[in-house]
Length: 206
Image (cartoon, rainbow, N blue to C red):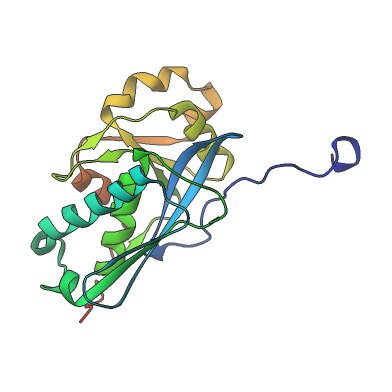
């Protein structure tokens, strides 16, 4: 192909190679169509600061803060050590820092990666997700589902978590994509976690 068409002009994201703690796979719409978007979260020494890197726009920064607030409100149910958010700092990074990124649909991905990082529970490598999150954990609909689903299918993803209110958009997907992905429709962040996290012993962060 390169001999006839030249050097590839675009690269695309692939599914993670293994289930990991603090890394979740989201989806995004770019100038070249849909793509997979890795969100990485680390718990570091600090005093409760939120560190954001990766050229995140204002809307994505707001999604990150909403994810923190949701996790704090659910600390006891999720097994998050008391006071963790006051004695540690949270670093959220979205790789490919040279590319500006914005939009609300990474909210559920950020929340999943964050909760994975503070509980020690791994995120499934075969699962991508999209959805806006509210402070109460509600998952709101997004745009560009067709492009995002195409990117997930192309990247080796087999399961996709999407807002329930986007169910109507599934009819717009090519049959090979609709049949090749196992879609999970969600209305709340608790449902996202049930599909995205691998059951594993939680690492106590102290």
